[in-house]
Length: 113
Length: 116
Image (cartoon, rainbow over all chains, first blue to last red; front, top):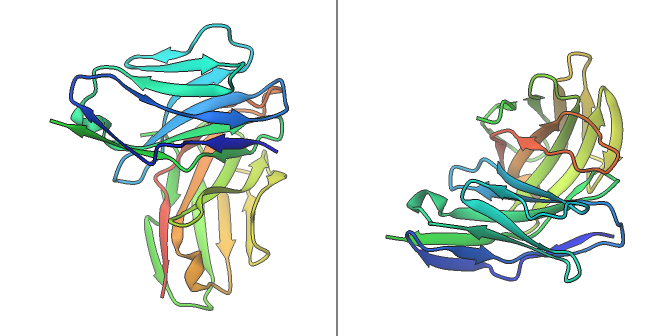
């Protein structure tokens, strides 16, 4: 079975600084995908970034990058130059061939002015 | 805006009742997924449909059922509602079932169900 662990229930970061949100995963499959989603207080789930298990380069999308360390089974999200609008819950998720997404419990990020 | 629509946004009902949540996927997406997000359970996968057929099942109760129609919209039916069914219900859609299961899901805004 697949599992996602997000050990940081809450994080603070100063505006304009970078922050890393941790995510470790467990799967016996060689082929899988890792995703990060953002959930602001309004409730919607916003797709941020994706990393495939066979991708050799770390994924980047604007200010978001995914620090993928396959041997350690970690897929940390790095947000550079934090903005007040980045305050939200962030969820890491894994999907394997069953197509079922398994989500972590989330990390609540608060950006301080 | 993800392109996935869900109605209604809010639903308040009583225990024992039955409700139907509706989802329209993004244009061109064939797969629809349903999730339940409650405070104590986090985000739980319920069920997935692909082009009208059920493809994967998660932690869906027997009191819950879903279907996907020929126009690809989907409905989630919740019956004999209990207080614990109060949650945010998300629908998500994706283009295709890729072989490696790495299909990005785009979420709708959710339906907040309150059972009194």
